[in-house]
Length: 552
Image 1 (cartoon, rainbow, N blue to C red):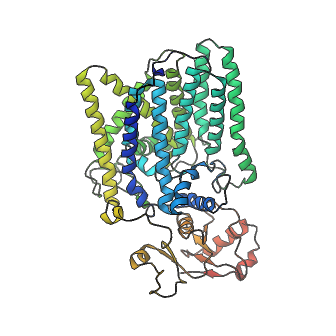
Image 2: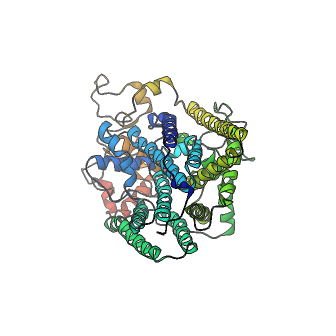
Image 3: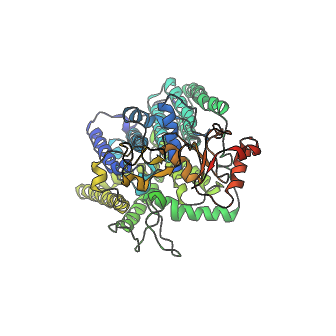
């Protein structure tokens, strides 16, 4: 991994590509402003758990990893931490971390493409990221659930591999190993990064003559990897609680795999690349699902979509197929860094697809976030396609500009129409300040309506009102953690036992004469479910009769 080889990407002197990158980062940031300002509208419980973790961090209580997920380290919270320190913990400051992650994705992919294929390809490669799909915009509103920091880590790891192959030096291999080890602490998905990166690097070393320096570099890489994994192992031992133990369990039933393939082709892949599921011939197309998630689009789309969806779908999927084919057929020299990147990212993407098909817990299009590594070969292939076309003369160069502009226009129109349908482009929203947590959960211990701290009626209409003294809320998973975060941590969210409970020890603070549990939606068997949750905490069932239980 340390024998340098000649590469056309070795000349990194021009400065104009950095200007292209800067303009791209600026545009993609502007496009996500409504997503940040409307954070309270699309805040779901998974994102709220990230917010509770951020709230703990700002208060000086750091965790090894996110609650109930030892496979996801604490690193993503750092993306929102500076904003939360400056402006307070709120939905907007939380979601702003997703924008930071997306900027890192674009930058890391740009650097990877430049190192492997040259500055021209790098500038073209960021077009699918700068003008990203509605589905990808939605993921940039997530922190852990979007897996965007993991994607940036993935692209940066391959950029580091190029440095090892072209410049040499055992210390670079050691840093790459450390990076991969920390990536495993960040998210278990980095296993797929290494599954592509390591074979590609070894194959490149083998073709170029199996130098002794490569053996030394491999040893140093492993040492760095072991060191980088230490935080993950320490965290799993310090806080092993994991309610998602079977989340990644495989299943090999042909009927299930066939259904996963259908979800992959019809729902998840289109949603990732173009932002919408393909129309289902047996159901009515719809524009949005709960909390504004982008869903099916079609000629009967009821949202004010500017009719951009079908055009974005057709053009985006056509370009995606062309990009993947072009990357597969790349004819870089054997043993070169370009060939290693080509093979590595394709292996990682292929393994992600296989894992998607056999993962027991694939149910709907929301699982498209697990395909996030496909964005790297999509971007690199797009850059190679544009370079191939532009190299055929002035007219072809003009055609690439027109094609890229057309792609950018239809993708931007699709995102804007999504915002319009949700009301996120209203003048009041864009002029207003980010919504804070305070006021979105209101306690009935306010003094009088005339109290200056009482929220206005507009906020009360959309707020959750809790009885005075509430310390815990019991209900649906998708509500309780959201309420807990919006209350500023004042209450503890407790989901029904049919859902995973992210917080071990939630019953602390509920004792006879201490605390009060509010049942959000008293379904007929809520007492039996509460008893089951209580038992899972190893608490005495007889205590329930002595607790303060509140219902609407």
